[in-house]
Image (cartoon, rainbow, N blue to C red; front, top):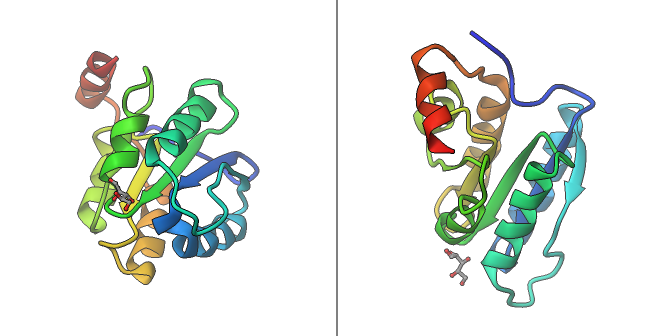
Amino acid sequence: MTELIAQAGDTVAIANDHAGIELKSMLRQDLEGMGFKVLDLGTATTDSVDYPDYGHALARAIAEKKAKAGIAICGTGIGISIAANRHAGVRAALVHDDMTARMAREHNDANIIAMGARIVPPDSARALVKTFFATKFEGGRHARRVEKLG
Ligand code: RB5
């Protein structure tokens, strides 16, 4: 086993569109409870916004090392994860259950967990975030594969 994506005291960024407002505020509290500093990149209201703006902002925060890891939320999690994954070195994993949250870390060394606020119930989403941050990348053959992602 190698390492966790972030340790207590590290900064974790979170970004969402209008569909993710409620889930974001729950997750912010959970992240703080886990000892992380939170960089909230918005959006902050339910006014309709464009998810790529938030996915790109989150990816830039990771690429520029302003945050160790990130959480991306839109209605399905699809659009915001597509946007984030257009940045080199960013690996956003769209997860929906315990296995995908674990494998995103163990095999893919994902640095962003993406979820759909209209897909995953809030309590499940909170559990998936805990799993994601508690799971180490396995390295080994997976490191070679992750390297090939660019
Ligand atoms: C917004 O209505 C919705 O399209 C967005 O939240 C997301 O699901 C896109 O992938």
